[in-house]
Length: 188
Image (cartoon, rainbow, N blue to C red):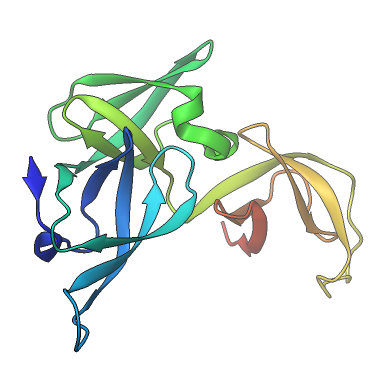
């Protein structure tokens, strides 16, 4: 469906040169001389690259209806991940490249958000924070809780993160999935 520049809003999807972009922010400009235009900041759904474009009044844009759905991680077979749609209870298969780097923190039964165009899944967003158990790390030292010295630790998903020296095997930690960094130890 084609739309005019007056119908642009944040969060909507647009198809530009065959790729799907999300409108991050937009600004309608009506200069004193000449015709109105809109400056749009767009984020690619596939590459996460942010670009800026300017559209004139005469430009027609292709609207891409996008839908967010809650999904639950079920299991993995090779390079494919299987999720259950928590609304329809249907199983959805997702290639590893759609999940991207977040696959390191994908736990069993983890609830994620899937961005769909029709029946095609475009993107999987993990929660900002997850709690994970430390499965392997070198022993820590009692009393050292400054948090400035770190060591590598493996979590229950198999990913390796940097944790403070006082964290031990069996501890539960909170992790920021956007950066892969340790946030805090979780009380059990």
